[in-house]
Every structure is written in structure tokens, then in C-alpha cells.
Image 1: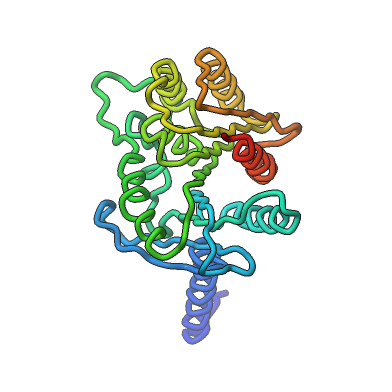
Image 2 (image 1 turned 135 degrees about the vertical axis):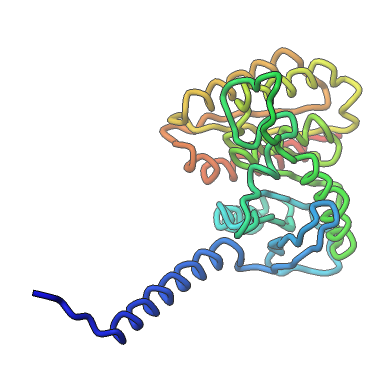
Length: 293
């Protein structure tokens, strides 16, 4: 018995599938690339592309008031937690108000590892050290950091009244970017939050770079600086090993200008940790500010 299918039915079915696919894609795009705050686009000459930036202003923002600045990676990821924590701290008078700037990754192009992995580690992250004849592309965190320093920060300082208190925060690959910034531009920020930093890249190369920096950092830190590290108790053993190695490096090379804290969040897995870390990091940073001379 042959089955006859109406041509119009097939056309309508195809259109329905296309429409549904576009709706799903549009929803993903909106969730990834549109925030609940102020969205601006910068044409970056350094990155040779347009980059969107989300700007969350404090409640009752006053153009005549001076604010501290927080820059985080990964756009909307964990942004609700940041918003709620900043609002809570402000209402309770636990911290100075801050302008929060979050940089999303591109949507149609895979840029996360390109932007956040340090230039001495492979974009296609690996646990082993690269071969001597390695031809795989390395990360381009150096370019992304230049974008922040030379394009984003001037844009922000020209439009908002900012004090000298600046935080850089990142999670996982973003955490490795925070550590990369710390050991290459230690005075660009005075607060560094690395949640579950992926410091295990290429046989712990990020850990090794931070360790070398700390051993020779007496002249590198020109002002008091705060570093917050955290990891989830239930994370991958490599992540826990890297975290432990970072702690050991920090303990082995104390510096009078560097105040650091570390937290292991009980029963937390990888994606749980940043949500659990924001309040502790902000609280520690505020205590650090209060104790400065």
C-alpha cells in the first residue's frame, strides 16, 4: 500500500520546523547577548570586531557621584547573582556602590577560549604540556586584555565618574584570565576574583606563571592588591589540584602589598561555585579596602 503525502503538507511542515528553529535560536541569542541593563557596542580595533558590553548601574545612580568599577567576563552568566549581591550589600551599607560591567562572548563565533586562555596555553585546552613542534593556536588573552585596558576602560572613564577601586572577576577560563592579568598587569586592578580558575592548562602552566611572578614580585606590586580564589569541593580533581598549587605558591612567596583569601565551597560542583563565591569575594574586598592605610 502506497502512502501519499500532500505537497502542501510537506511545505507547511518544513516552514513550521524552520520557524521553530529560528525561535529557538532567537531565544538563545536573547539570553546570551541581551541583558536587563544597559547594552552598548564598541568597535574594537584591537580585536578587529564589534564587542557588546553590559553595564549595570547602581540603584539610584547619581551622575555627580563617584563609583568603583567591577568588570567580569561571560556576560549574562551569574549576572543575576552579582545584581542581587550588589543590591543587598548597598542596602545594608556593607560595601561602596559600584558600576558592574560584564563582557559577553560573541554568539555566532566561538571566542571564549580565544579571549580568555593565556597566550602561553593552547586554545584547545589540554592537561599535558604541548609538544615542542606544537602548531595548535594559543589563547589570545593578551589581545583581550589590551581591549579592556586601551578601549573599554577609556570608554568607561570618559562616561562615568570612577574612583581607583577596580575589580576584575572571572570563572573557569575567565578565572585563568584573571590570573593572567594579575601576573602581567598587577596594577591595572586592585581586586582580582578568580572563581574555579582553570589554572591546570597545559600541565599547570598558569600555576607556574603565577608562581614565577610571585617569587619575583617584590617590585611589581606598586599598591595594595586583593586576590580572592575559590573552588567547589566536588569539582574535578585537576581543578582542585590547581587550586591547591596556587595556594602553595601564594604561601611560599608572601608579599606585603598582596592580600589574598581562598575558599573551598562545601558540596559545590563547578557551575555552583561562582554563585556561591560572589558575596564572599565582595565582602573580603570591602574589608581589604577598610584596612588600607
